Image (cartoon, one colour):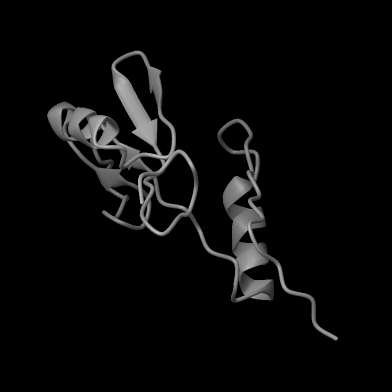
Length: 97
């Protein structure tokens, strides 16, 4: 009997270079139902980053509008850069339906 997962979120956090990407790739390879949450950020895109794969890159006014309109699950600001996971595709009390 196969069990069904629902509402499970796994956060992989560590300093740069500690292996987050390697662990993530391994998990994605083992289970096609595991999905990556792509966050919105106000920082500039690096040359090797792909829009919608690594982040959704937006300007500060767009980020603030998304925040005010309830389009972000949560948000954080570090120095002048803001980052947040979008509500799209999530059913939570925090995200307006």
